[in-house]
Image (tube, rainbow, N blue to C red):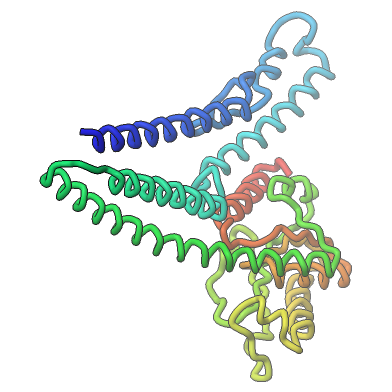
Length: 328
């Protein structure tokens, strides 16, 4: 039957598209990681530089008795060890893509599915001069596809709301960064901002109502700004979101008081830690970073956790492992 051919062609095209995307993803990962690395971590992750260390094991130009060669080998070993830890951290993440990117890809995929279903219904309805039994089958398939379209539309409405809400918060956080002249430090660069032997702290600077669950434990040197007093004051009424908190008349006063309370407890032992500041949507963290600068501390804004929970969490663990191993 003609309509069966159309359906078969549609399924074949869909399978071909999925296969193409899978092959493209594998090729991209292969070229990204390179072919010169000597060790795999996880599914596709490799560690750089192993073949260069093996050069020192050969007799000849790079003698193991040479002091310079020993020094170079030790430095390379440390760099490779850091890359091993980073590879481990990346493999512990929920996905190669952030939740924000996955949500966007999910919306695109659902749009493609919706487009394919609409085409399928259009093709089925265009069929003419078919037997009554076949027409009944076509009508039944059309009804089923219509239900699928309705379900996908409901999912897309939810996806659009989530993405729009995230986009609005991104715009507001970007505005705050520009306003206070704060630059976001990529997660991959945090390890290079921690000086050897100097203390550091990851500060959750989320300021809003009912934000009480710690992002991570104190073992990973994560502290919550709201743990430092002002939230318990009767005169302070926190808002339901960072965006609303930013518009409050006493916003700067509350944030400044929280920072002062945090510093009073943190600087008791006389050390000034490097602060890596983040918040749930990244809005209040921008101003807190600015306040820490004004208090004379070294502070870095590392963004938001919404949509990037796994990336931020595993980066914090990576820094802890590097510090406890003496690599930073």
